[in-house]
Image 1 (cartoon, helix red, strand yellow):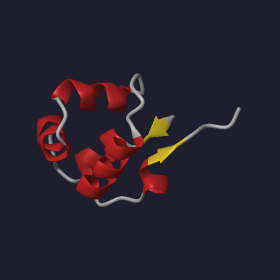
Image 2: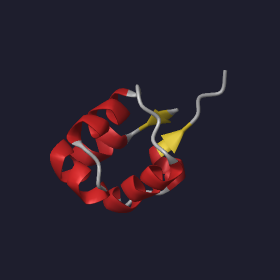
Image 3: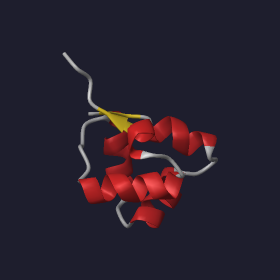
Image 4: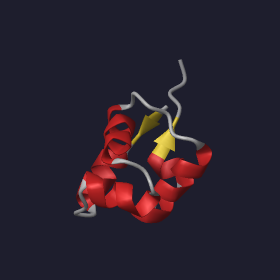
Length: 65
């Protein structure tokens, strides 16, 4: 799964720690999501969308092979 979490977070002027606090995870989890090495649950994806004021389609997608 691909995502734009890092880009959108930076555009919003927020740190990884601020975003982590808003969605109830650790900063390390945000780092892994941004790197694409951790696929968050649907619940966490939705929380990130709310925190970053984005739609699910705008923030996350699956590359078709």
